[in-house]
Image (cartoon, rainbow, N blue to C red):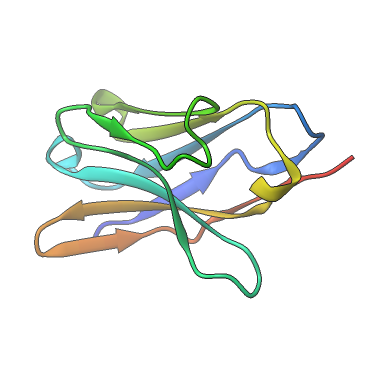
Length: 115
């Protein structure tokens, strides 16, 4: 069983930045595709960013140009740098690890963007 632990969330003003981290217990981390998702109360969980095992990143238009996903295979860690945060970015952010047929989720970290 792979464990994922997110950190780095918090309260930030609009226009501010945060960097989320997700550390995994996965000894085969480099072979996994990693992703960040978010969920607000009453809404479905939505994709924020993904990065393949080869380091290719993908973003939805809602965060493109503001968020950057990266990975450090030596540290079994994936990051999400979030800049120019907006109130609509407020959500619980979850880390995800995928390698067919397995998918693992962390418990999430709360991000609140408010003045």
